[in-house]
Picture 1 (tube, rainbow, N blue to C red):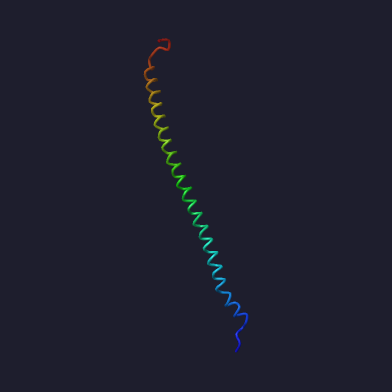
Picture 2: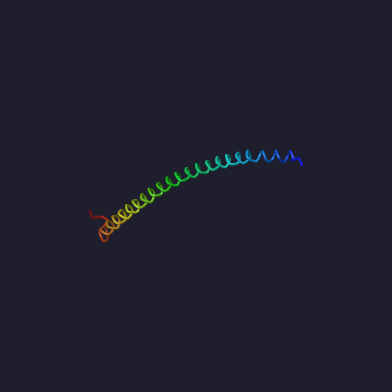
Length: 86
């Protein structure tokens, strides 16, 4: 019994299709890996920026507290004084 020529052609094409698919998967994996690396860098950069922002916010809060304390101190010293007194 003779082999089916279509089946022989399909069987012969399988290794080529497998290699093409493997190469495509390798390329796509490389792209995903590259994108993940870029994402990690961006997340690290954002994390650093967030840390700087939090530190600046703390410093501003401390400065506001000092300024409020000075205002309260100055207002307290003025309580009971005549507005015309020097």
